Length: 241
Image 1 (cartoon, rainbow, N blue to C red):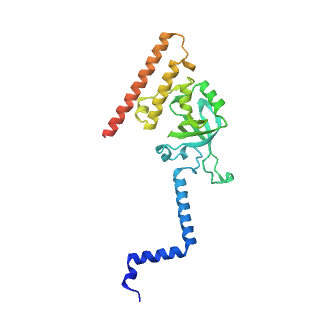
Image 2: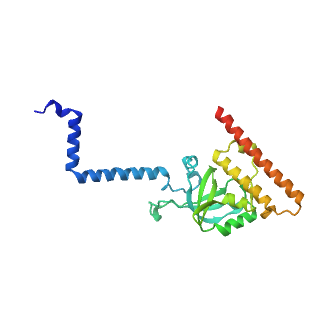
Image 3: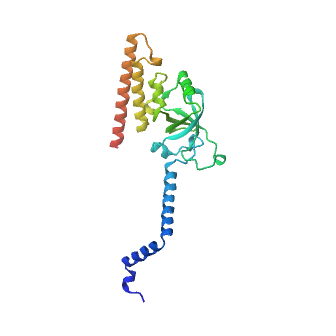
């Protein structure tokens, strides 16, 4: 007959401890199993194994969490559209069972010029790139695209504008008010690079007339200040609500 203390919490804990001590292998395998399940769940939630076959496959969480996606550039289309095959960081699905991936990327907030399309063709075609989705339409992902140079990723959007090859896209008031914080930061960065490209007469900003050059630089500075002020004003109104 068991004593009254046999059902106490301390007695129960002692029995569990004795059981685990006498079954070391079972305990170790159980811990390994729990750890493996936790790893699988973490990887699944991180999106590292998620295969994107088209623009509509981009999860909303990727945009919210600023996830960068790995891809292989298959071709550069008209208007600088980058045709990419998604290549997950962890390829756990065999190639023969993997769905065919074809994602169309548009460089967010950048007005692609013919020289810009040629630069893309010469520099990123048939290469691995990373892209951060900012918004998605029915067939196209507007993204900040990155190319690894040396040990750091460089934004191609910013690079093209900074070289004077392309310029910042003209935006409507509706587009400005609906921008996310990430898009606002990218826009400010692009406008800043465009101003520098103009001051240093890079690419399309090579202007012989000093008066015209000064007028353009002044206009760009005013645009940068106005857009920055507008974005901050809109954010303050949203915060108050």
